[in-house]
Image (spheres, rainbow, N blue to C red):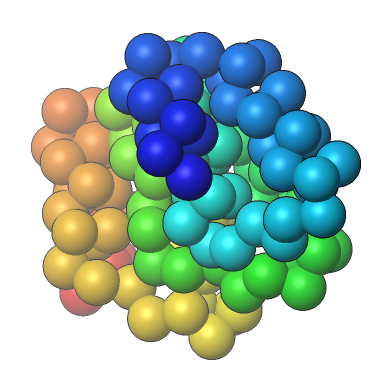
Length: 125
């Protein structure tokens, strides 16, 4: 997973995906940490749709997403100012049984603040 994290820090989603492919070819089953690194790489490259694909693939592989899995996508969308999409991911996270933490809420509240979306901010409480 160290190589995946290095790819994530560089925002090199393609390289991270290639390394995950190598892991799978070698018979190594990726865990949540590995998938989270791929999701982070996609987000760092500002590709929330690609990150969402990997979160879905993670579940298809039987790996349960963590609060980090969802929060990484929420952060990307919040930084873009896409409050609606970020809130939809928060709803998806809680519907999946993953408890949102203060960090996830603060990301969305920050986006609400930057976009002047007071109604959504109030609705979170």
